[in-house]
Image (cartoon, rainbow, N blue to C red; front, side, top):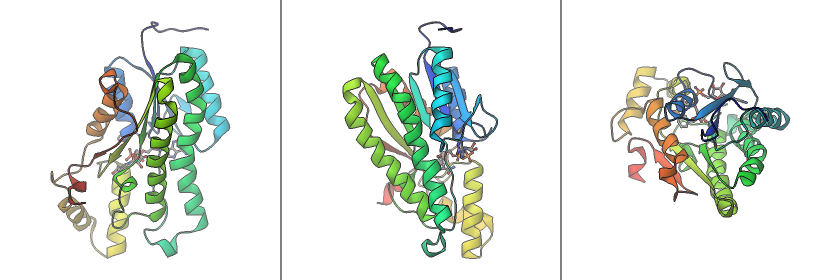
Length: 250
Ligand SMILES: NC(=O)c1ccc[n+]([C@@H]2O[C@H](COP(=O)([O-])OP(=O)(O)OC[C@H]3O[C@@H](n4cnc5c(N)ncnc54)[C@H](O)[C@@H]3O)[C@@H](O)[C@H]2O)c1
């Protein structure tokens, strides 16, 4: 096995890290600052061009990482999409399939390819980027998105239970509103649905946030990096809201 990094360095895979303004790119940067060797997966702009909904592509990319670096200490399942209408009756079968293929099956595929390596190593940590929508329904968010993120939270808890004995921790972070391209799309959708401007949509959304502003991608990345660190050694099976207090009212 060839490796060009010190044996002590930790290796992380971050999916959905191709977009420069996204949570994934920020997570990759934060983990690198903290000493991780980070390998990114995305449809574009990443170290490995991988569609996470395609199990064979994921397996090949994970195997390539292991043969180059020898190990995978952390997996951050961040790739996600918001697809389709916010109205249930307008959602097509394709919207449901696409949303679940990426947001849910993508997590399954990456975990299935990675966990055997973590079991062999006797340790590992997985962070699934769910959403506040994985804990509660949020107005004007596509129901398929909400259902897929609830599924991710359920899977997180189930895997934490199963793989605790292997010293593999599995957690979810549940961001509220984060200033990325995905939020811009969500605000445009809300504006179109309500017949208001995007500025009005932003003001409406911001009103629900106790801290009065959307999070930055770096603020979400910091929590993900914490969950990947040894400081979180006793944390598994959690789904942590990182939402500026949006969830305070429920
Ligand atoms: N922005 C928010 O307000 C917000 C809130 C809660 C949760 N999230 C979640 O955070 C994660 C990151 O979102 P973001 O806001 O950074 O948006 P983003 O669109 O910048 O990032 C998502 C990334 O996933 C990639 N991706 C999409 N489909 C893929 C596939 N099939 N295979 C591989 N990569 C794929 C995209 O190319 C993109 O780079 C998502 O899972 C999203 O659901 C975002």
